[in-house]
Image 1 (cartoon, each protein chain N blue to C red):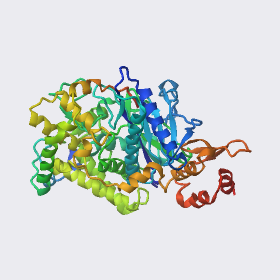
Image 2 (image 1 turned 135 degrees about the vertical axis):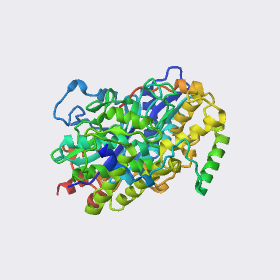
Image 3 (image 1 turned 60 degrees about the vertical axis):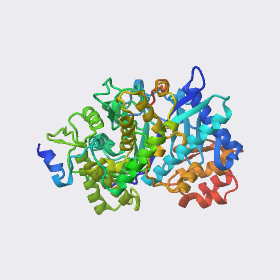
Image 4 (image 1 turned 45 degrees about the vertical axis):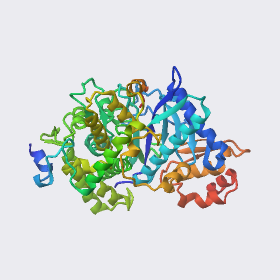
Length: 64
Length: 503
């Protein structure tokens, strides 16, 4: 595992957090969270009315 | 020595024709583009577009292979599906390709410029939808999605092109750029709900890349089947003695401007480093396709992947290493080949993205598409108590990429913008000034009636009395505003322009 050791960051610069559990703690994080809540409140007005039909009928030909 | 990283992005868009029983995507794509072109000509096409000018296929060789072998059976079935094919006054190509509308940006001088033209392309598609809807019968409409997969195993591409030095051995390019292509998705992946390789949603609920499921080979000529990480199409669209065009087929189409900028910017820097032999470590993965898919499905960014030479590395560690080499490269070479002012900004964004991924991925929810999308979809899922396989989550995924402003979810998640509105609007009709796209676009705007056809490396003029005149443009960095603007402006006809160019 020598290669891994050479390239790896020092432990202090890494973190164990993952996307699932990274809690935003800063003011910016709080603001983003509030904005996300607002978006979720109004999103149903924007969403396609019948999600199942929409997803089923979204069929594309393969391209490059 | 590294050469200037002139670049472009070609995007195939998903298309839906609503309100018809048996929609045909080729017809819909043709309607979409033709509607835009006729809209342009009604509003004075000579200024905004040259709808009569077609694409010139002479000398195009998509079957030529950079490995030096020609394999006719592997040639993509391209030409016969080109129903509509137009050149725009911004220097772009807008056409129907494989049952999708496709827009190739003009050749751009740097990552920031191409990000702006990619956004201009979105506006062109948006205007095309409006133009088509005004022509279609009531109850019908055409909707365009800037994504790369329908969620059912069908994929369509967002390709990048970079000018590279012909002297660079192709084998070295393959060895040294592949690790970057496998790992850069951690900041430029567009995110996708589920898997298209048959894994159930409890095994793969969400992944980082739209495209990783569709790559099966390391190196090859194909673009539509058995897609390779490195595409070997050897079609430089420039002086073949001096240049290659690296045709990159592995990226996702990005909604985030920062992600597009970083995708192209980091890749331009890595290519420049390869030209200068600045990557000192052998970073080849032992199993590239496995590594690509592992990175895509590892939201924790912690999976270590074995290297060919022994040892292992995570995607984040490999990207951090490339970043540090790029800092070192910049200190020794300056940034002229990637843009004097753009280079440091690429490094700043790259560092910011890696630090965010290392410490708090959610802090990137306004710059990295897959994180923005995951955050939105997961929050919706939690609020409504849905399982990952729920159709509503797939619908959110698709709608993230909807190009209608009133329906687009990516436009609602607070993505940071870096391109100026005025520049994006200008990019709809005006070419970049620092590449040969300037000559193409400016000639089309002024002499569109006298141009028979155009392609990336030449234009054909009909000046009346003589045989048709082909003007070669084999140097992508010539034909800029600095070179030809005054000649074009002072010419009253194409004949006069050609006479001055001959002189």
